[in-house]
Structure formats: structure tokens, C-alpha cells
Length: 597
Ligand code: SF4
Image (cartoon, rainbow, N blue to C red; front, side, top):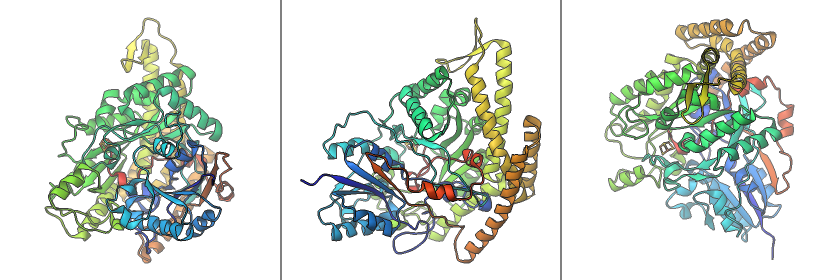
């Protein structure tokens, strides 16, 4: 009998370029530029994220497996020729035609090879008519794949050591990607009616790293392999598993390891934990769902979001608020009111996204029952274009594109570049944490792990962990500092120029004058930023919203993990600054997942 050999692959490139298989708008393999810092031109950090689940799956089965990430069509064909019994294709809904081409090619040239489809694309109701396949990987993928190959589904999950992003540019300068990802679990119990990540897992949470100790051990492993201490936690609602988050902080404190995290969490759990806990935990950026000022979600009900965000930011935690446009209650007046409302919350970043009824969600079922779903090709279902349901008030597709684009533009003009906001939050947080620490030490206060606050202690001791945390916070602020100069030079208006100057003053007061290295990095970013501005202009002449970057293809073979193919090429590239990327590693979320948390 032929030994099983599995190829796990992402869809083929190029990405973000309109062709026979996919659209351009909203379809770059980027999060920030696609849906958070869109319309911020040269200030928009550019990062693409690897297809993380493929590595997790490969790490956790004993079948000989190859991961092929961001392949070209040629890479895909070449890899198939090595001979596989199974091919797993991961895709999202708007990439269905790419998955179709790949699956049809496999059927035509390797008829004995089984095709497994995975990813959010598998929610397509009539998928069988589009993409030939033998199995659909649904639900939590590790257990599913182990069961498929007859392996132990309950064996402990091994976490891959994965550096991300695939590429990183800031003000046109290419940097060395840094930061790592953690995938502690999938699904969310909150069940917001539009949320595919919750409905995909039947409104249940599935742990991959169930305890704080498990998470800590994964961090230690990744640090030892990649020398990374900053992690993006890919968990829809990380703080919802309260005990695990508390235990993670307890273990970090006990071992004296202050890792740094970017997380997704809903407002009600953030409020429950409080900003002091999050500072100690090392949360640098938090993604919070706002959705709409009229929303009736439990997660935001009764919470003063403006106050909550202001408190988080004052303590050094950058906030990315996410919100949905084209709710049913939005007409031409109220949609603008909602946009103003969310901008008025003063977060560092905002994700705007058009309301997207994905199959499997309650929203989809409701609209289906009301006969309001429109027959829009799947390739257009990415959340940045035409609505694929009949809206009660706004039904011109040009409006769907325009309101969204204008919302991003409005945020940019009012609050300035996201990277500037991030820099301001970092220095304010460091200053306030330092002052707070000194005051508490003087007053004999200590951290109470269970009460989640500082309390007066009969036996006060030096807060060694907070001292380590302060060093990390200082480094985060120092790393953000070089961005202030290009943020000032390329500011969109007088108000933002002034904001950048005030930020520079704040940094000088807290940290003293910039050092030589920081000044050099700023100078380089101004030069590369000027070149990037020209490139953006040229791109607009050929009808693109900005410069389109393509990630490198990457191959890894398991169980004997072969060094990453793309490493050599990355080493050869001009490396401007690792610190630049340290402050910019950001959480990945596909357009599919909409305005979560
Ligand atoms: S939108 Fe956020 S809080 Fe709501 S179900 Fe999804 S992940 Fe959970």
C-alpha cells in the first residue's frame, strides 16, 4: 500500500491583483493595509501573514507532510510532481476560484490523490459545484485531521514556532520580520450573530493550549527557537478564558519572563480584568469589537467604551476598535453618525468593514429567511465591496465601496496615522507605569493575583516582575520613536503635524534626546517614505489604491522540519531595522472574520 504523503497548501498568488481568479480590493494577504490603516498612504505599515493553520496541522500529525505557503502556480505544480496521496487546500470564500483551479488540476493530473478542503471557504453552501473534493475539514482542524488519518485525536497539541509576518515594510523601508504567533484555541462562546468564527465552531471554544502553563511553555519554546518575545495571540476572545489568562500572568511572574502580547478580546472581559492586569500581562495592543453605537450585543452593553479605551491607552495599551458599516438601521444619515461615533471613541486604529452575511451565521439565516441574500459571485464576498444582501436604505454598490473608503479617510484625517497613535500610547503608558510603580512601592502596595488589583501589603516586597515589565515597555516606546519624524514630515494636515511634534516633545521629556541610531532610522524612513509616496502615486495612475507587495513562497517539510526556504532570500534583503517591526507586528485576521470581538 502506498504510504500517505500530505501536501497542505495555501492558494496561489499573485495576491491583491485582479485577474481571472480573484479581485484586487481587499484581497492582499495583508491585515493592516487592507482593513485597518487603509487610506493612510505612506503611513500604512505593510505586512503579510503566513497561513498559520497549515503549520499547526503539519506539526500535529505523523503523516509525512509538506506545507506550501504563498505558492506561485508554478510552485504548486512543481510540488505536486513530488507525489502526494492527499492535498489539503486552505482558502477563504473570495479565493474560491483559485481553490477550484488547484483542485481541478489535481483531479486531472493526479486522479488517485485525495483532495481535502479547509479554511473559511468551506462554508460555501454549494461548494461541491465549484471545487471538486473528497473531504471538508470542518471545526477544529487538528482533531479533524488526526481522526481522518486514524491518529490519536486527544494527543497533546504541539505548537509550531512560527515567526510572522512574511514581509514588513514601514514608510517604504523593508525590515526584517519579527514577532511570533500563538494559537491557544479557536471559536468564541459569545455567538454574535454575524460572526463566522463563533458559528463555525458552534459557539463553543476549543482549547489547543488549555492552561496558562501550556501557553507559557509554548512561549518559551518559541523564544528558544526564534529568539522572539513578542506574540500575536490568535484567539478570537483571549481573555474569555479567564483562568488561563490569570495563570499565564502567574507563571510569567513566577519565572520572571515578561512576554509581550497583542490580543483580541471583547469589551466585557476587558472591563472585568481591568487595565492594571493587562499591563502586567504585557498586552501591547488589543482588538475590541464596537460594531455600532446602537448594537445590542452583550459584550458591549452598558460599557462606556470611550472611557475604557482612554484608560487602556493611558496605560500603554493600543486599541484597535472594529466596527461594521451597513447595519439595517443605517441610512445615509445614521451610517455617518455611527462612523463619527466610533472615531469619537479615540482608539489608535479602527477596522471598518461592510456587513457580511457568511453562510453558517445567524445573520445569514435571518437574511435568507427574509429573502434578502443577493446572488453576488463568491469572489466579490470580501467585505470591502458591494453588499451581498439587500439593504433597507442603501443599495448602490458604489455607495458600499465609497462609505467604507471615506470612513477610513475620515479617521486618518481626524486622528492621524495609526503608527503615530501607537507611538503616543507607548510613551504615555511607559510614563504612567513608571510613576505608578514608584508610588506603589513607596506606599507598600503589591499585586493581588486573585483580586486583580494592587492592595496594601503587610509585608511589601520589591515588585521585580513589574521592573522587568517596565524595561519591556520602555523598549517598545524606544522602538516606536523613529516613526515620529516621518509621521511629522508626511502628516496629512496641520493638526496631525502638530500632534507629531507634541509626541516628539513627550518622548524627549520622558526618555531624553534621541540617540544616534534612532535619528539615523528616522532619516532613512523619511527618504524611503518619499520614494514610497512616488510609488503610491504611480500605482494610483494604473488604478490601484496603493503599492501591491507579493509575499515569498515558503516550503516546510515534516516530520523532519527542513529549514525555511524563504530565509535565505530574507537575509539578503536590505534590513533597515528590526526594532521598527517589533512595534508593528500585528494580529492576523482574515476579511472573513469581520469586525470581531
Ligand atoms: S464577534 Fe468577537 S465576541 Fe462576538 S462571537 Fe465573534 S469573536 Fe466572539
